[in-house]
Length: 426
Image 1: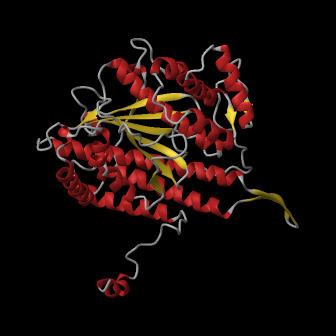
Image 2: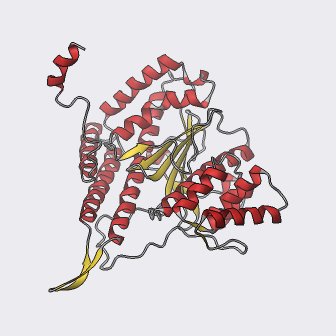
Image 3: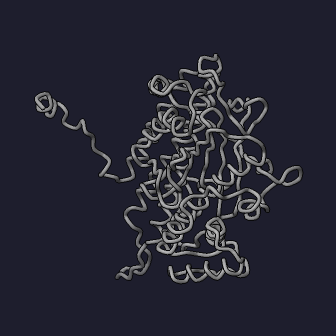
């Protein structure tokens, strides 16, 4: 799995050109499509060769195009609007396995169980934040009912919404939820829901996909995972069209009780699934190390400990996504250094923003290391672990403060004492 570059890596003397998302070159597909007319002609000809005009065939062909052909942002938008409104028809066997087969362990299985593993980690949250999340979950439970009685995905989304919402709050608006962003589908009438976590409102970094029923059998489960991977595929294509790619995209699959973690890289075309163990403070579900679950009964003695584990796994994943976003922005800014000729000589002049991204990255990496270290202290010194986690959150806040976003850095409660008397009379 690709990792974020170390914070202490020295910048390159010359900005590297953007390489873009690695395409899988195959006969019969053009290297690049630069206009909507070219795209329509290619799709029409291909469907004629295939002797089909069905919408599903066109959707699957469009999905193959983003693997094999570079698209301009305008052409990509047209492709999404006309042929890829969502990824619900994608299957493991036909659409995902061929692209990722070289990274899979097919010794025993050729379905989702062939996905190789990566170790999950927890970033500790101070207990006071966990209490705040529990308070919000109490409100959700009283408004909606117990999780096991919820009948559709929309209800599950509302039920668990306090968890990602509380985590997002820690990033001070630099990570946001973008549920209808380009190429990520949308909240459909059938109740299929997701959280699409983005950076500065344009980079897509992380998906939380909700399914009412996570797994009926291995084939069904593989196809559900295929749809999630297809979402990350579309997100990476969108990122690449604006030169914000080259980093892994995370995906979390859940039914509100069980959580599975995946990370997909389109730089090397690899997919990994997260695994946990008791030695890492992550209790797996009935021996299944790639599925972290809650007890079905919210009053079970194991419920709150398991919930804390899952929330800290989610938090660690959000921090990783945040760091990937910073690196993508840093690379984008570095590539736009200007070449200058002066009386003192010639060379590249960095953009002012590059220094902000470097500082944000250094502080973000330090925060991540501190939050993980706090988790490791939890058994022998829980009070100090909470104190260290608070320090880690302060570092994370300092990192977010390095990213200028004045349109968000205000509050309805600014100068509240002056507004309060006026509002009392409204």
